[in-house]
Amino acid sequence: MTGRANCSRRGLKASAAERRDAYFNTVAVVGPLVRCASVARPLIMAEVAGGGPIGGRVAMRRWRLQEQDCRLTSDDRVEALTPKAAAVLTALVRRRGELVSQDALLGEVWRGLTVSPQLVREYVFDLRTALGDDARAPVYIETVRGKGFRLIGPVELAPPQVGRPARPPAIAILRPDVFSDDPRWRHVADALAEDLTTDLARFPDVAVIARQSAFGATGVHQDLRDAARALGADYLLESSLAPGGEKLRATFQLIHGEDGLHVWAERWDEPVADLSELSATLAARVANAVAGWSGEMLATSWTRLRRRPAASLDAYENYLLCLQHEHSFEPEHRRLTIEYGRRATELDPNFARPWLLLYFLYSGEGCAPFFKTDPERSVARRAAIERALELDPRDPMILAEAAASAAAHGQAGRAPDLLARAADLGRNQAEPAACLAAIYALVLADIETSRRMFEIALRLDPAPPAWYRNVEAQLCFAAGDYERCIALGRAYPDLASTRVFGALAAAASGAAGDEVCAELRTRRPAFDFEGFRHDLGLVAPEVARRYDKAVRRLLDA
Image (cartoon, rainbow, N blue to C red):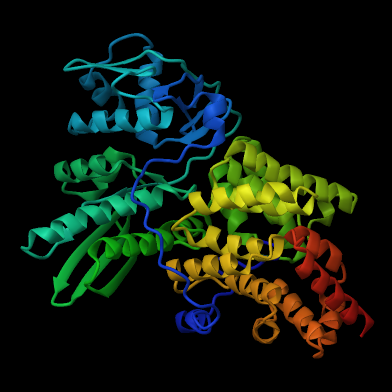
């Protein structure tokens, strides 16, 4: 992310000790993590305008199922499905109005595999959740007890798209093993599985298999590869709890479903205190380690894509390569990265995340070959984030950056609501919290909320990627902590935003910072302080005044 994260989420990382060093001395701990107690998605305004739950009844939407990329769309909503859920719905759509038995669905969707009929019911439950349906008064899928299911609502198959659309990897959370005869630990283990399912489901780059489906499949299949195939899961997450005295040892292992190989493992020894809070804390930590932009699932995907020819890549794979290289400001690298992003949007125009990356990539230098003028670049950048917001108004990263973009274009009044929704939908996600920390500081000058968000990000990701230093530098400048900001700029000269804000802090405090201006003129001759401020959405009056004053001092030096 330019400004906020202009370095790789996996590249430019220090050692684990270095990544932890200095972070927890930056800001005070402000409040505990908020535990999400429900998997239900909050209503948004579009649900009222577009036909969501009203007065306790389910209003009617017209849904289109994009079979290839496992996506349900209506005029105001987008819902991602797992591959098996999409296959079940496809079978029902193709037999609209007909009673389809569980055996028929098992034979069509799980051809050649032996699975429990309960699995069908779990996927129907998932479909009802996505559609906003109510089993007691259905308007989309009717259950005929003991016989099967019938599609009765307006769901149709969308025409096939050009190219191969995006499909994020699916993960199944297996039932945790418990090494104790005390029955309370089984309850803790089941709560952990529920918390893991809830937290992982909030990440846009991951599809999560229903918890009961995952538990049932592993009871039938001894070989985890067979269980992964039956569930349509690309990854399986195993875990175990081993209590001992005042400590609990929690172990987690991420397994690639196709070959059964372990791709990540971690073990934590935690004090036994509030068991419900312990479960929520572990789940949030694992979810961010596995599913975030610097998580192991994406890292594994990058490794597997290295030997693939470009022409064979689908929308999601182009998006992953765009994400991997988004940090680079080298012109040739930047051109290639933008091409990955554009290719992803061409293959699947309804995939929101590549539009978010293009918004980042269209900032400042490095994208000149794609635009004739800077105003043209600015228009394209704004259009990219608005398109991303239109496609997925529930993605916390998109909401946060849309707030910054709105503020930069004279619509600061939109920012508070967008930021509040981003904070709500992005709870227990480290990267949205980090981005929100920067935006609250630069757009609203809300330093207290900014510090709280940054602390949450660090608690969720104790060994964070290097781009968090950019956020910290922006927060320190906005808060007037120039000494810390200068130290960050000197310690991380390869992080452009951190370096710039360190120089600005030096100028603001009367220290020398002109060497950074000379360096920018040499290494980045196209660097523009005004454009940099605009791209960040830095509009908070007092912070902007200090920024402009520091820039004048630097340029006059």
